[in-house]
Image (cartoon, rainbow, N blue to C red; front, side, top):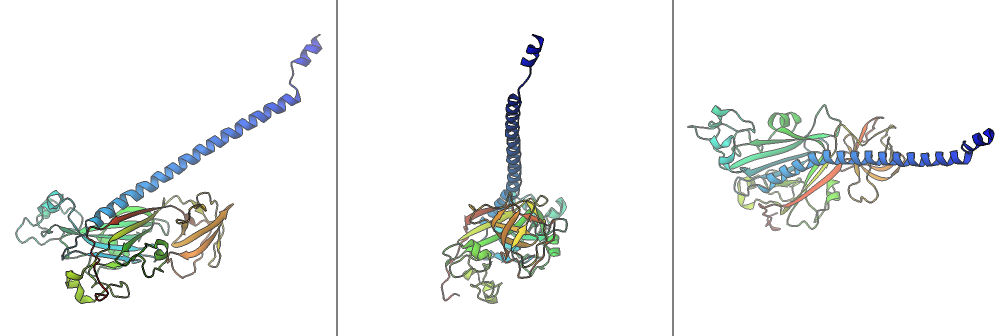
Length: 372
């Protein structure tokens, strides 16, 4: 009787296998849940970082551009590719109405209250005693934007600088042949955002039929496309740079000034110290396939527009990708004809693109063929 009872208390092999199978299935399900939660948290964290960079920049640019002054002292000068590679640089200068009016400005509300005041406001508070020495701004202020590569950031990840100056066209004006190097930017402007891969401003003129964004960013815009360069005075840039230029005499004649009907801001941002991938194989100048540690966050096939990644200062258009390999088109967005070699471990940034299209209250695009 004792032997029979002991034999009934044991587990059969089938029962053990069933239990192990159930435990394995539950473990795999829990692993998937944990992995999914981690990916959801990672994506949310990344999205939050990118939005916290992009939204303030877009709002700041929109505020300045909507306030552009179309009067005799007004200016809007947009130049791409001044402080860096052709595919990432931009230099914007404009004259706008005073934010909130002079009486609401913390510094300039006291400007011109001293006899013979002729000083300049350069975006920094000179102190209570010096505020009254600033020349009267007449309700206008100059603003400038530029992108700069900082030494401490990965190559291709840029910092946006912004500066203010008053009175408009006074001493040290942003329009008085400023320097074209990064030293000038750091001296005259202040950093406002980092983690920027590219920033472009497309201008819609009278003859613009379509933005043709991707074509224009590649530097191949034609008839009916938007413009990446603008000179509202028609006298500061040559006709080779701006098709509506009329020569130096036009600079002093505000009657023929022109402003875009609309503007499109295209902003590509990334987390500068946290790339989405890194190269695991040397990328030679003639290779059309990149080998990275992961392509998990690369743009999918459903994304037919924003399929660009950035390696160093080189933009690449991503095609099919899987298992850490991606087919790419090299040296896109005018990022140079020079063939570049990228080393193992070099970061690959995917980031995210933000766009803002706005009508310009100062629009004046009434020119005719004769005017050109």
